[in-house]
Structure formats: structure tokens, C-alpha cells
Length: 112
Image (spheres, rainbow, N blue to C red):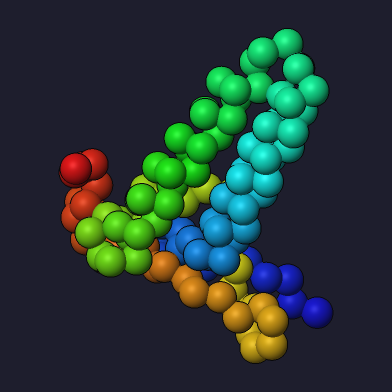
């Protein structure tokens, strides 16, 4: 059986929107767990940890939206946790894949 491999264009790799959203879901669930642990008075650090996780999630969601809209090169978001895999077809494995931008310089500078 052929193993799935990362979808790429040259040295750039595509990202899986589904994998990125799943990772962000796990981060939000971790923040919720920290809130629950914080309510049991876990040495007062839980509040800062929750704020850090939520700031990270907010930035990733903002940048994901910009990449989907074509205003940010998806390569900026690429990481091993969201690597799109070639060979996944049909059924529940369907995914939205953002290919790398053909113009690597386009959107590489962060804009507000």
C-alpha cells in the first residue's frame, strides 16, 4: 500500500485546514482544562497559561482566515501538525488544502 506523503510545490508544502483546525480545537480544550484546574487553585499560573493559549489560537485563526482569503501565503502557517498529505481521498478524510502560493513573496510580510 502506498504511503501518503506531504503535498508540496518544490520546497514549499501545502497545509491541511482540517489538521490546523483540529490542533486549534485541542488548544482550546487544553485552555478549558486549565480553567477547570485553576478553579481548584492550581498555584495561580493557570490564568496566565489560559491567556497565552487563547492568544495563540486567536493569532492562528486570524492568519488562517487571511490565508484562505488569499491575503497571506499559506507557507507562513505550515508546520508538521498541519502538513497536507497526498493520497487521502473521499469519505471522512476529505479536507480543504491550501497549496503554497505561486509567488513566494506575496503576503510574506505580516500586515495588519
